[in-house]
Image 1 (cartoon, rainbow over the protein chains, first blue to last red):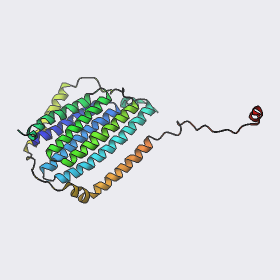
Image 2: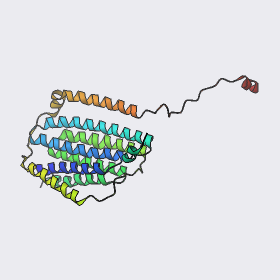
Image 3: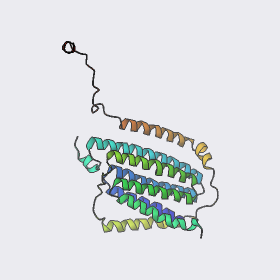
Image 4: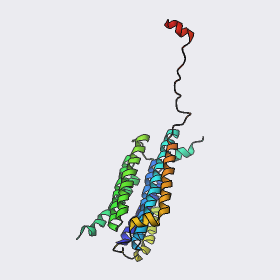
Length: 99
Length: 178
């Protein structure tokens, strides 16, 4: 059963990496980063449970979640500013702009 | 057969399905909703593993706060803004390589011992006493995030229209009134 949980975390990681390779929308990239962090957090809690230190693993995972939420807030604010400034959320078009 | 026995076999495919649909969704709002479903499945998974406190935090922060933030941001940029994911089929060689990597990484995990039963320490004691620096870092991060957002979303003074100034009436205006 433990292997299945680790496999699920690994699958989430691979799906997120695949999505990051293809996504071009800024908000979509923020969403995919959330999937990435969930995979890491799930693996962290699993490892702490296996090693018998679940309380320590949970306290570390709380820090990860808080930092991840701040990343979401800042990322979305940047996306809103990019939309107002460049008129698009497509990262390829934003990079192609010459200021 | 108890619920704890068969529920993981329901949650694991749900985790994968929500992640894949969130990545594939063409509309941003649909992707945000699939992410909310993934957060719910993750919270249930954490509860089944035994991390009850983390399950509650995952529900409140990821499912609650992050979903609301995403919905707010999507409404600001336009709910009909589609994702411009590259519309092409993935290379078969790449898919085979990814599958080989998955198997190569999962096989060593089969040697992992089973989840330990019983109490694994007091979460609140570890969080508030042992990991106090982490709490201070989190507080600093939250303040930094708030200040960053306030600065990012502040209206640019160059684009903000000036406030109309009241002009004193001229002599011609006074004569016209009289």
